[in-house]
Amino acid sequence: MKIRPLSHHDLPTILEIQNSCPQAAAWKAADYEQLIRNPQGLVLVAEVEGAGRLEVAGFAAFRRVGEESELWNLAVRLQHRRRGIAKALWQQARRQLAQAGATRVFLEVRASNAPALEFYRVAGFKFLTRRKQYYQNPGEDALVLSTDLA
Image (cartoon, rainbow, N blue to C red; front, side, top):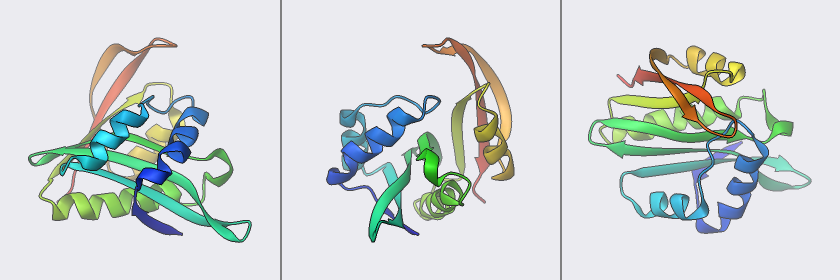
């Protein structure tokens, strides 16, 4: 597996991955393009060997504001889940965010997304608060989690 920064030619692929994951945040290509150009942005992709070539299996997108960072999105293709891809993306992002001066990461996750909640728990995230009806289509509460990078 190879973790690398997102390039512009990856945008259709990460949108495909995002759209195939109903519980992932629904960002647009322009949002990711803006994040790539922003010095406070960090978007990583995970490539794995598939059919004799590397293919993008997942991605993670973050935005840093001062010492804080927000996880915008983390998604892995269904056929590549439970293989450590999300963990590898998180570990690389954690290193890069800390090197850039971030000390804490926040995220929102659907209250019903049990696999993501378990992943974040194991990764060290703690519950902060609940945002009522934060998500739409379908309407659902968001749980706000955070972890320190120290």
